[in-house]
Length: 222
Image (cartoon, rainbow, N blue to C red):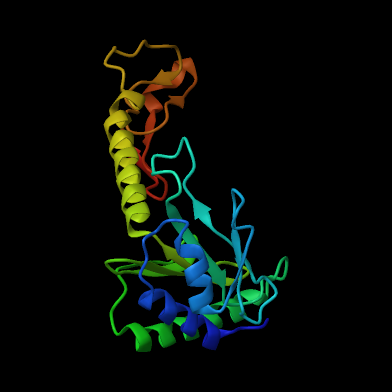
């Protein structure tokens, strides 16, 4: 797996120095500043071809189009691969983790700030939030990548995620209502088993009922 940390660091430095307006007008100027090639600028989905020595130099550009909640033409995010993209090779995970650790170490030296947020599942990642740029680094099972994100885009997504989480919490009681109707006795069923599954018994042996507790707790007398 090839890794191009030197050019990745130079790209990050250029991104931090760039005067982002977060519109499509940024694309030619940023391509020139970082030494990349801009392709399909006059089309709906432009892209960059980076100068990193990896097998996936093409990188998409996310631009807001209707019915997006963002203004048409707003630049949402772009990014680049720091390593080769390797498919269906489980042992590449070790190389990916090593490249991620080395890149993050170098970025700490460059940025001189602790990341705003980090995570370890389902991928490894972290980001720094600056006034005009969000810098994100992620490691998947097949590559390491860097994303350059519009802060307004990140904030909007975080707000939408929080609304969805709150709605999920508010909806939880209605989806988990417990019936208050008294249970109906059936032959051979011990209704005292309230905290576990009902224990079915022979009709003439109801007095031998036991209650099953949570897994690992064994049986408790009824």
